[in-house]
Amino acid sequence: MSTPFYVSPQQAMADRAEYARKGIARGRSVVVLQYADGIVFVAENPSRALHKVSEIYDRIAFAAVGKYNEFENLRIGGVRYADLRGYTYDREDVTARGLANVYAQTLGTIFSANAEKPYEVELIVAEVGPAPEDDQIYRLPHDGSIVDEHGSVAVGGNSDQIGTYMDQRHREGMSLGEALKLAVEALKRDTNGSERSLDAEQLEVAVLDRERPQRRKFKRVPAGQVARLLEETPAPESTEGDSEGGDEDK
Amino acid sequence: MDFLSDHAPEQLPGNRPLPPVEGAVQAPHGTTIVAATFAGGVVLAGDRRATMGNVIAQRDIEKVFPADEHSAVGIAGTAGLAVEMVKLFQLELEHFEKVEGSTLSLEGKANRLSTMIRGNLGMAMQGLAVVPLFAGFDLDRGKGRIFSYDVTGGRSEEPGFAGVGSGSVFARGSLKKLYRDEMTEEQAATVVLQALYDAADDDSATGGPDMTRRIYPVVVAITEDGYRRLSEEEVSGLAQTVHDGRLRLPNGPQAPVS
Image (tube, rainbow over all chains, first blue to last red; front, top):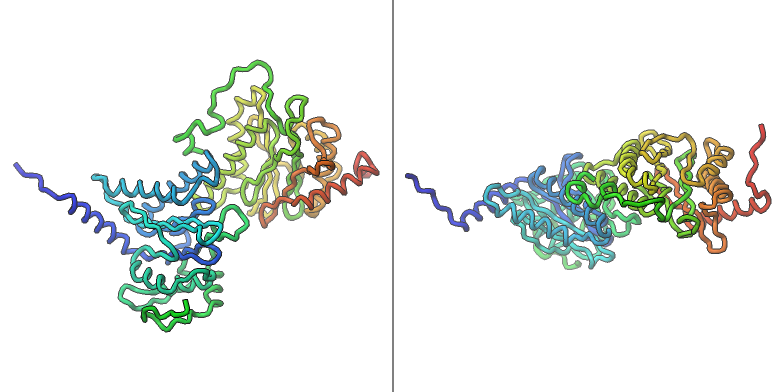
């Protein structure tokens, strides 16, 4: 009689985490930054049809990396949750915190359930507030934890390097052009330290603009406008590349 | 809505048990809505009165709502049910837009509203009818369009102008004489205000412009740029012009005999 082989729970979880992380690391990154009038989402995404950044509700948007079918599923779930909640109670009662909690529950359950494979996704849920200090950004890794982020955040393939690059250079009250420029500079970073070139056509850009008069603050920024914004904004004054803390003026 | 019926069917207007009642139920009713197309879009307007039998239930009710960026809906009939129906309709259009990443066609929106009215037929048979008027800018065809409905959900597109509600008979008569093709937005807004004035003149359930309380009809315009509600100043200005005209000619502008 064969003995069923034993795998310790620690090992099982580590394997699953490893699997999910690898899946996520294969894709391109998404970055989210606060700027003076709201929150900007920048994704490297050659497809015009399959979005990585989408609207969830009035002040809430969603960004994701990883497997498309898996995060699309979560996105639709989120839109349903938000719409049902807003219809049952009031539009004000739909919050990013509530939504992030639902996502965390879902991802956590899938991650720990024995039968299925974990989702290879990492999500960002962001809500724009009436003032910059009321903005909320939550990052949800594949295992169902929630990380409360401020200023800037990156998820996906090369997120560690990109995240560090942005953290050093991001400051409060940036204009949309400046934030966009920083995001693009950060996304150009490759795993091996070299830089790739990125033009507006390869980017998916959207904003949650608190100054937008409509109730729904989410707006996609078309490629033409992205190119114009990047062109008009002067390059950041920092000296080239990797010198750490090179920006005394921040 | 499909998601609602699976997960929270009690939230759907059509799914409630019908109340056992004898005679008409007393609930606030909204009255007259009119719409007219013009060169770059369509205007939709509603008076501000809700009645319950012979009583004026509310004198500042609003019965015209945005459905989405490029369409609006005005409601006549039982106010409570109608407002709820509009809320669900708005939700559904927005939900579709977010999930699919594109907006429904104007025809699609009009058809969806038709299904929702049909869902309320049971209530309508008990005297709680909801009859909306739907207007929007068709981005594909580049023009304003108007759809009217009956209680069973029957839908028909109206060329030029339309009206629903108790005062609509008089409003339509007035529109017939005043409407012409290729009006400007301001002219179209004035025409619908004239029509509401005529409706209020002959129908006790329709409210005219209330000069003393400064309550004026709600007028919205939908063009290629989207939905816009005319501001209080704009509407009061137009209402004042209409009112001043009526001081001279109480029956309103006169159309040529032949």
